[in-house]
Image (cartoon, rainbow, N blue to C red):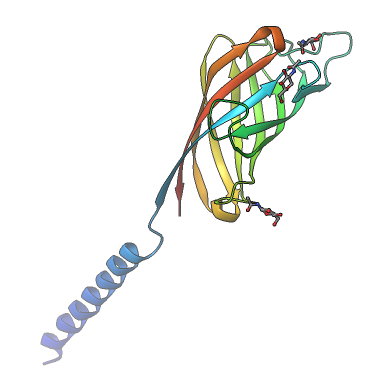
Length: 180
Ligand SMILES: *[C@@H]1O[C@H](CO)[C@@H](O)[C@H](O)[C@H]1NC(C)=O
Ligand SMILES: *[C@@H]1O[C@H](CO)[C@@H](O)[C@H](O)[C@H]1NC(C)=O
Ligand SMILES: *[C@@H]1O[C@H](CO)[C@@H](O)[C@H](O)[C@H]1NC(C)=O
């Protein structure tokens, strides 16, 4: 009798265990995709400058193409390409020219949202930023706060408007996030 019961009982528990695993997989933590497109309004110099070089190698120029230059930036983020379109937040953080040949940078910054939907929430960007001659760069989104807790994803930064005479550049930023 025991010989017959044992496998049946074992079988019952295995089915139960598998059901629990399948159930948890289906119900725990579905990921949600979030897509956001915004425009980053940057002035690299002049009275409206949104970027400041704050450190660098002594006696070397503090510019984007010089290894070791560190910038702090605080640029407006708008809904549309026009600088007068509704403001949705600010991009604030640190940029460093991190390759010896001056061709690449490393970025660590936050998008601090102030629009109604994401007010007070942030998304955190990190990775290789500017690459000389590359018009679209891709960065990791490593985390977030508020509405963006437990997100991860990536964002592309494409230069869509440039007015060198006033040091003005607009990047279109397409953000794709998964939230767990
Ligand atoms: C552009 O930036 C340069 C370097 O910071 C500055 O000398 C110049 O006045 C700026 N031009 C305008 C129009 O803001
Ligand atoms: C965002 O939150 C701040 C502080 O809580 C509040 O003053 C502001 O009016 C809010 N903005 C929007 C667009 O809801
Ligand atoms: C500064 O920004 C304002 C818009 O906020 C713009 O009208 C003005 O032309 C800008 N000035 C320069 C020198 O970039």
